[in-house]
Every structure is written in C-alpha cells, then in structure tokens.
Image 1: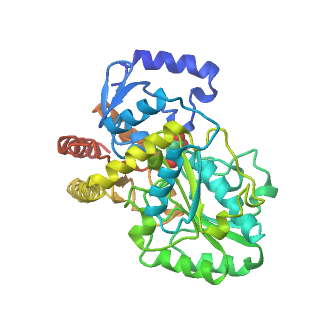
Image 2 (image 1 turned 30 degrees about the vertical axis):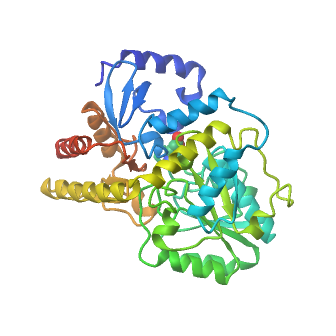
Length: 425
Ligand SMILES: N[C@H](C=O)CCC(=O)O
C-alpha cells in the first residue's frame, strides 16, 4: 500500500522532529515510514489512511485473544469507573496473583511490575541478593529487556538494528554477564563450573522468542536445570513471551522443567503494561519490605492491568484457547513448509504453539546460525506481505504470533500471501 499512506507518512515526518527516531520503541521504525494505527479489532489492525491488515504481530505477543477482546474491554471499563491508580493494594492484585501462582507452581510468591524489562531486572537483582553473588549467565541472542546487565548480544530490535551491545552500558556492569550459545549444554556447564563461586543466576528464554522462535533441543532444558541445581545457581526462566502461550503454565509446564524463578509479561496483563517476577518463597522473601533487595514502582499492580489480566485468565480457563491455537499453529507450520518446498526455496519454518516464522535460511538452533539468515531479503518480503494486507513483525528476528481471534479464513489468506510473496524472493 505504498504511496497511499499519506497520513502515516506525514505523521512520521512530524514525529521524527520531536520523538527520537520518530518512535517509542525502535522496532516500530519501519522504513521508509511505518503505518500509524487508528484502531484494531479481533485479528485486524487499521491504519489512519483506511488500510486494513490481518495482524500477526499482535502487539509483539500480548494479544493472545486478539485486539479489543470484549471481555477484557468490559473488565477495563468497569475498573475505569472506579479509578485507575490508587497507590494502595487492591483485591484484584490478590486474585490475579492466585491465578498466576496456581498456573505456575514454581512461583510460591510473586510481584507485579509494569514491564518485562522491570521483571527481569528485578529477578536478577533478587537472585544476586539471595546468593550474594554477582555474575549471571545469559544465552547469546536472548532478549531480557533493556536494562544494562542484559544488553549484550541482545536479540530483538537490538539484533535487527545491528546494535546487540548497547553503548552507554559500562563495562563494569557487563563484565558480570557471561554468555553461552543456546542448545549447548557443554559451554554452559563449563562457564558455570569455572565461575561457580560468583555465579548468581542463569537467565534464559526456554524457547528463544526474540531471535526466533528457536526451540530447545530434546533434554536441553532438563540438562540446564541439572547443572544449575548442582552448582547452586538460580535458574530464571524468562517467560515473558512463552508464559500463558505454550500452555497455561508456559514453557515450564510444556517441557516439564521447574525453574527457581520466573518472569512473565505480555499476555498476563491482557494487553495492558505488565511484568511479573516470582519464584521460590525463600528467594522472594529477599525482596523489600521483607528483605533487603529493593524493588518498587508507582504503577506496579496497576488496577486496569489487573482487571485485564483477570479477564484474560478467565477466558483461558473457560475456553479451549491453548489446544485450539497449538493445533492451528501446527497446521500453519506444516502448510508453510509445503509452500517453501513447492517453491524450491532453501528456507525453513520454525515455531511452536502459536509462534511461527519462516527463516530466510536454515532454521537456527542458536544465535550465530540466526545471523546467517537473509535479513534484508526478509524485510523486502515483509513489505510485500504488508502490501497484500498482512502485517507481520518487520524483522527476520521477531516471532509471528497467531491469536485466538484469527479465523480459518484469516489463516488461508496468510498462507496464500506467503505462497505468492515467497515465490518472488
Ligand atoms: N521483541 C520485543 C519484545 O518482546 C519487541 C517489542 C519492542 O521492542 O518494542
């Protein structure tokens, strides 16, 4: 729809003068200009120039039930009638905490925060406070938000833009962050054993969602659990993307591996800003006011977010969302593989549950392999898909998300668009 987006184009010109990079998050700076959204309902997103797209970006994951789900909307509206920021605890905080801890038995206790970044930052600080150790180990290409100690070889927009190590982060901070390749238990074991005396935590996405999806090899997560346990290292599963997506209990339920701590975000807030960190009672008891690990936030446990989160959980509990999406995800991946093979392309499909991606290259098993994919070819493909009314995340390194609102006809349109646009690759 290039050329027709005159209002979007104008808005971006205006924005670039007063908003750094013209956007509030770098992945949105789609060149030559992004479309500006007017509204979104169900599986559709509509721009200010009247173009409508079937959305497989879904706000980068939170909208598992689609845009503007009526039950979530009603829950937020009811909360708004009663005010939307108190600075005190509220009953819904207890209610949502119960629902989350029921779904995640590894979390005896939790805290609500306002973003995934805040959740991972707080989890790491708590693990350091608990162990009295400094070092953490992350996976190369893992993305755990935008706080200093994890902005090294970071996935997501940082990799898309070729800035996986951010300037402005002191070396004194990142010297405590070690990195191992995904799916390589030997490297991880070696690093943990070598640094055992000062290793506080391993933080990882059980399924890498910010350069993928990249799936864990068989038994890899179990082996990670074993080596962390044997060396008294806190294992943090960053389930900001996979939480409430792969299953109600996230990747830890799906793969049957129990971490010491978990971070959540995205889906648990029903599309409102949210983060959660939690874990074993003895670890979470370190957090102030009980313990000396400080963590706080004006917007933490935001009433509107809690209402949206509870409404989301209610739908997930009452409807067959995960089974439906997991089945449709399998079908999409299988059809995409057929399309690729019929077109004689050297590409591969990766994914799990309602996450899927065509890699312009071999489906990677780690960060280094991901970097070999044709990122500019992918971006050209993304634009062709947009012209055909399909909105995918604008990067080879961001996952596509299927939602409960996508109809069979939406999926057929997606597959048709893949078929015609992959042929032009
Ligand atoms: N992959 C990111 C979050 O999970 C994408 C969102 C963003 O950077 O704005």
